[in-house]
Image (cartoon, rainbow, N blue to C red; front, side):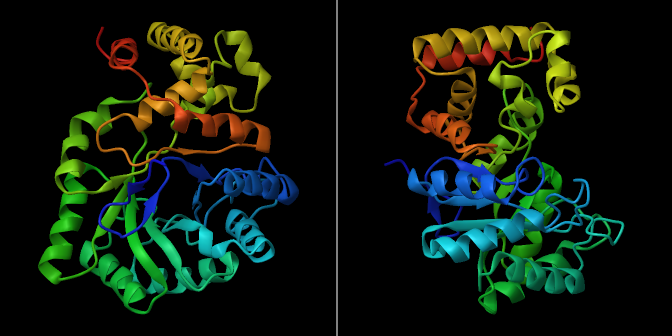
Length: 318
């Protein structure tokens, strides 16, 4: 069984992370429980959420995803088998990104309560807070680790420059360091991660758990024409991919899916798993059936020729 470490955190996982931004938003508690049951039954362990999931949903105020996960952990009795990752700092009503010490110390208690757990395995800064020094943010995280409320910390949406500043602050002030990075990375959006971050995170032994691995659903092959965009509420978010490059990527995915008797989505995730420095991609599902199909990506070992074909199709300059 392929397991991969999350940096130097001491945590290892199978290379697929369940994204839970849909819980309490596009799927209700019952459906969410079915997805979580299927994920655990398949032998996977890491669930990624955030306190702001899904504040944007009608009638929501934030914390819905954490609440559902917490209820499932309690009812299933599977807390010891799961790796729970959540994020802090997004707008929960304070009107800004906030990674100040006081805010983090308060926010973690809210997340622990919603998740019905005594410890968060991976606590991540959600967005960059340029107004708060890294020393202050990391001091708060350091305190939480020493208190036993958090096992390891990570960051999301940081540039190479800012990640380096954070690592330097940890070293200089003898504080806990970020062990993971959560960047946007997929076949349609490669340049930012590969140019600025990929070699750096490998050098620093930072685990990488990319989000938007399926490019908002575009890499499933569901959207191939302008007419397809109206078939889903997410259609507007993928319109930018409907161009020559996008169609070439879909063609390469179709070809590989046929070769490996799989689906374009499975191949797209398998490509991510094969990239240097990647620990595991994050992907969400709205049903147990959809999840089980996505999980098959972890069994696909793409050949060098297939990876090269996908790389060429997805290059920005062709």
